[in-house]
Length: 424
Length: 59
Image 1 (cartoon, rainbow over the protein chains, first blue to last red):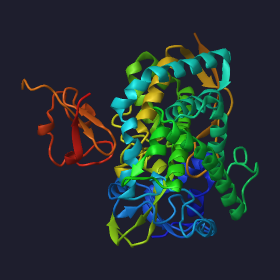
Image 2: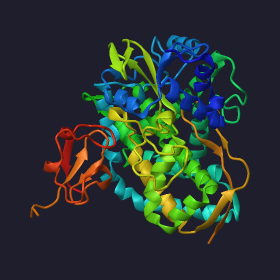
Image 3: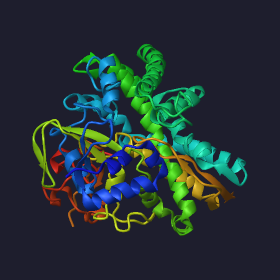
Image 4: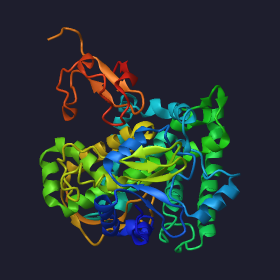
């Protein structure tokens, strides 16, 4: 079965994700009528669209059968893919991070930082993260009774935490935030480097490449510093990390920093902003979590499901396979749609309602299998600490205008969440 | 009730922690459920890693 061109174009359209309803409707239609089918949007190679929760788990679980790195890991036009391959000596990737790797490399590279991000090792950071969270709550209070929660709190707090963990000085945080937004917001004229809608594919790829180069120049200096003077930070682990006894390759090291310095805060920021947006729209849910702070863990899982900041990853079949009764051929490209899996009516009762006490809540926002998000425990801890600190002082919150979302189809979430609030 | 101290197990892939004392009621594992009593076919609730790929850890 083939997906209609209209729907196929919608699921790759950055503006549909900014709209919210338009993308939800497209995926709801696919789950009803064509839950696993081939799409071919204009200008793209065909790919399977995996919309059901169970099928996403099935693909992610089999990471030898469905590879990350064989083709682009993000849905890409034919023209952009060609340009990237020309630039990168045939590789479809501008960077080579854990996201673009398969085993044995993926396992070896993941091990370099995994220990530092395990729950038992993150506990040592909690007191410092609480101090940072309190500082942001104080700053929010200083705004009086109105602020843009996305820009004034949610974008800055996870940024500050990950940059401390990584070892980037506070003075460079605005630069890291700008580069991250330029990378993930490449299709958004409010955020990208050109300041205009990107219609020319070559210009779009060049723009992303120039952001990547800026990141690399910055982290080159960090690498040299940490090799000479190791510290207790993530940058030191990356700079001195060895693969099979040898220092990791330059592209791999730079890509490692880039993923930590971008995905390490942007996804948590989006979820945090989206959570307060949802609470402002659902005062009964805010009252519930205020009355019973033990629901904060439920709020966190529900907001991760609700926002699902990573919209998709692509996989490539390494052999002929069968999935949900369909024949997948070796080399087929597959889009794992996480927002769709997280609205799957077969798994989530009333999936379009925001419920802080949703149980169970087995969302797929962090992925599943070997590629599951390395920073998930840090993200949960950051959000828990912020909500504990904020809800102890926040009496009331409501929207103060229309929130907006980023124009993007890969990693994105709220761009602005204007609120009116009362704190004590 | 066994007098054996409760132990803690961790998934090698994602870091999920199973503490025998707390169990994981959301997964149908009551507090006090011993690792040995969890079926061999059980998988990590976060990432799907098999039970055999967990390590016992000290917290």
